[in-house]
Length: 202
Ligand SMILES: [Zn+2]
Image 1 (tube, helix red, strand yellow):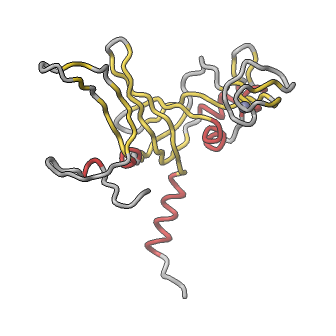
Image 2 (cartoon, rainbow, N blue to C red; image 1 turned 90 degrees about the vertical axis):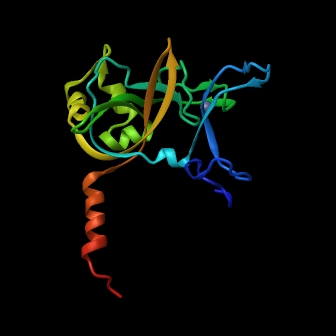
Image 3 (cartoon, rainbow, N blue to C red; image 1 turned 90 degrees about the horizontal axis):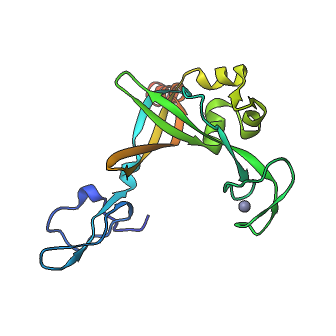
């Protein structure tokens, strides 16, 4: 991060000469004010919005989904190529093997609520100890095998960092969540114990 960068929450009304690193998450149509001045509504977030850690139970509850997509083995963009023969990736400009890549929704729940978040690639692999190839082998006629179902449907507790994406569809505001990072809860507890209970050895 550049020096002299202000977080959005620290900017005070009337304050000038600040710099913030932001991302636009919502963009309105350009409109005119009563004085015929053009304006546009933009919603910004900065890095501080990304640190939403929640301690939740993670599991798949919806088995009526695809679970993986075929992707380029180099750039992970989706492809219609199937099987194990190289295809021409128009992004990478070379022939590469298609590869099944995990992408599925999981339910995150704690004592007060439930959200549905999407899990991609490596995150899905390490959360459930599976990979895209495993899913491809364990799906027959759009049906997940019993073993795979048990692997994905058994709740595992994690401290999860989610990223929210807001969008509006037919005037209903929706929020999509992506899993950004996660840690087993017991690892965090062990770390805390180590920090607080163990005396420093020289
Ligand atoms: Zn590619």
